[in-house]
Length: 306
View (cartoon, rainbow, N blue to C red):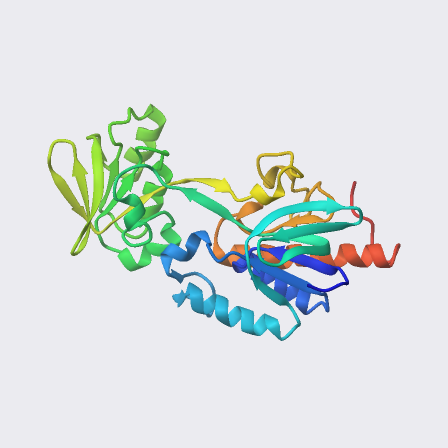
């Protein structure tokens, strides 16, 4: 930790945090990035739809990114942030191991947690036969037989989207009484619905098995489902008087209504995709840099809208 405050502390070392660190490092800013290493996409193993990094191991991507960014003086701390709070004209980020890190700004990119349903087998097969994002996983499963679980969070739009990769899709309602509109979307997509109660999901040699209450087990290449997510904003309490950071984000460059706090990645506006998260990190970093210039050289840049 330095005696002089950092220009920015970045919380989160995924694509958003790394993208922000690269931009700020190349802007000659003093930066510390704190990462707990338990990102949501680790279960997937590899990342897709990132140009020049399609299919690359997530661990390799992060290691190479750190090596590149370190050339610009960015410090990396493998640590867990426990609190982030304002202190006068600074923000204090407290980590379990490193203690207090003082900075002029904080760029928060800790991401979200997926809320897996209580359906037996889903947690064990998550990222290994049970998936959420078709753009991340469906190509490798193209032409296969896919189940879409709609018993928890309605997933009719996910089922329709998957028709781009295969015509063989079965929608599992898990005994839920589907609203007419949901069935209409499924009918329009040509996706049949199975209304039987689902007991669990198991691993098969060539895919996944879906166990039904009537004793039958259906075989699929993989299963997809849409999930609710939980924003990872615990360290921001009680400073953040809101449920999430989207509700306090004030522009598309990651500024928030909380002074000196910026957001990037899955916690902000936009699709939850690696490439888009990295881009949002770059945008937020440019906002940080511009706002620090405004502070150091008043009147040198156009004023921000109220």
